[in-house]
Each structure stands twice: as C-alpha cells, then as structure tokens.
Image (cartoon, rainbow, N blue to C red; front, side):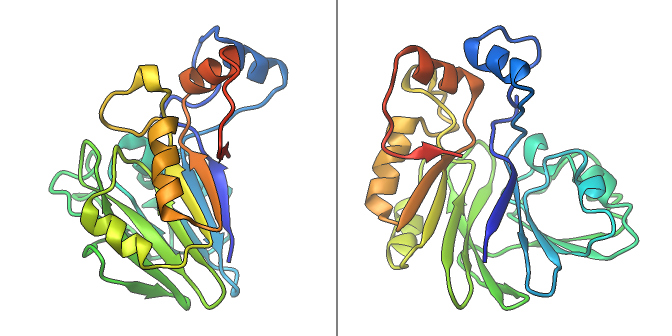
Length: 238
C-alpha cells in the first residue's frame, strides 16, 4: 500500500498567485508547482481511493479509472473542490466525511453520482481489504484524519489540524505506525490557531514515533521563512 500525493501544499498552493517571495519565484523559474493537499491509493485491483479531493481537475486526472471511494478530512474548499466536477461521473462514488451540516456549496443538495456518508469517529470502514479509521482532529471546522491499515502497512494521514486531542492521541499511540503525514502548514511566527507550525508538528511526530514521519500542507510563507533563516528541520516536507 502506498499513498501517492497529487499535492501537499496549503490552500494557496506554490507558487502563490503573484507572490514575489524567493520560494515562489524559484518555482516559476524551475516550472514547478505544488497544489493543495490531496492524495490517493491505487488498490491491487487498480481501483482508486481518494484522500481528499481539493484539486479541481481530479475528474480529469482519473478519467477512465474507477474511483471506489473518497475519504474526505473536511469540507474546506482546498479539500473538496474537485467534488464539484466529480459528481457528474457515470460511476457511483461513496464519499466518507466527518459530520458537517453545511458541507461545501450545494454538494449535499445536488450530489449526483456521489453518495455522502457521514463517518463515525474511531469506527473502522473497510474498502478493498484496506481499513480506514476516522480520527478527530482540532481544526476550524469538524475534521478527521484517517488511520489506514492493510496487511502490510499502517499509515496515519493527519491534515488539517491545530492539535490532536488526548483521545485521538491515545488511539494513535496504541498503533504501530509505519508512515505518518502531519499538517505543518506554518512557521512559528505565522501561527493562526487552525494549523500546526513545524515546531509544534515536530513535538507531535516525536510523540507518535512512527517508523517514517513527514510534514505536509506547507505554506510558501513557511518555506520562505525556512530558506531565509537557514532552518534545519528534523522531519522532511513532501
């Protein structure tokens, strides 16, 4: 089992529109970009399981492929935007998500091909022999990360969050985690109460003790701060 990232940036992406910081300018020169955090698993039967769907072109990216399920962390636009087109699929697609009365735009009212299914925290769902367990995270709206387990590997996908509750932490600590991907959107001087900064995220990853740990959801402001101040990080951004 492997998580493949289509993007690992925050909602602004990199380069951010008309930003003149060193990171954005270098990305333009190198013709590089990093889109909002969105990932997928390709199953042994070649079906796709999405982790978030914030990239607008997700329907085009996976055209001709079967999307079995979507596991949405929350309904912010940078995690749900792709659903607006994906709902016109000719296939039925189950979208598992945390409790949210509003959702995103008119997706609930005009769900089309997508079946929205509210998840239950810590209640495991099985898709193609892979177990997905929703883990509540602290964010500005109701948000769940996911513990993802198959016969060979255990992965913690934890974006977006400003912290992890004692209950969620105890659940994670009881697991032998092979890979952990954690929100580290901010630098310490940009902290806003909705996301972890890389110092806070380092403390969380140290505590979880996964075999391999990574930062995700980084902002161009954060990367520029790290570059300008020659910061040495314990964990790598992907």
